[in-house]
Image (cartoon, rainbow, N blue to C red; front, side, top):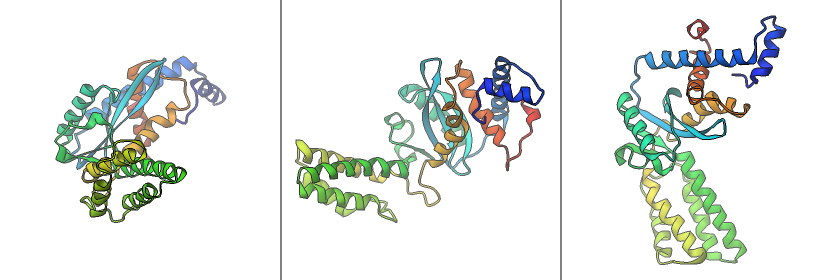
Length: 270
């Protein structure tokens, strides 16, 4: 969990006069992960207000593997981890529908990956504010620089105005009139830089009201944090997992070791 390789863990244990082989350590970690997963799945089901979902890749013996994390936004609580790549639309949507029903979530919070579109009723699906602002802002700034380089002052001014609208606080829940005017200005553009501006403006207008306006937390940052703390912090320091069940069990073990208020009972998994 500290990011040490199994070989380095073997060295540490040897210094502590508890010698063990790296293969034995790997098996022990995998077994503890399976027990942690069982404990997690046997716990009473939580009722969740907002369900966060996000996928991430998993290095596994050269294979293109992935997992999807489901997290309770309120409280940063890991709910479950499912083996699936976000490109596997049918599989991911099946997992989403099942988990939503199990935890009786009122809302699904995700990024803009198309796999989540249609997974639940449109009124119950909201986009992460942070992800939406970041992706649209980056695209608007790129077009602004292109407009300045091409001496297209009108397009540059339009992108400046769009960036201001994206940064509005508080953010209007409905499409601002200023944005509607910008869309109308470029609605007939079909080529070159104006066409790119047209596409971006229409996309911003189309997704504006899909973005979460939750007064508590309108982002999906909780899911990103859980992925980082329970999975990525470890996967970045290793060559890859050897089996899919080890990929799935690892986040449960890592989450278990974080414990309640920093305390966990190791006897439950060892």
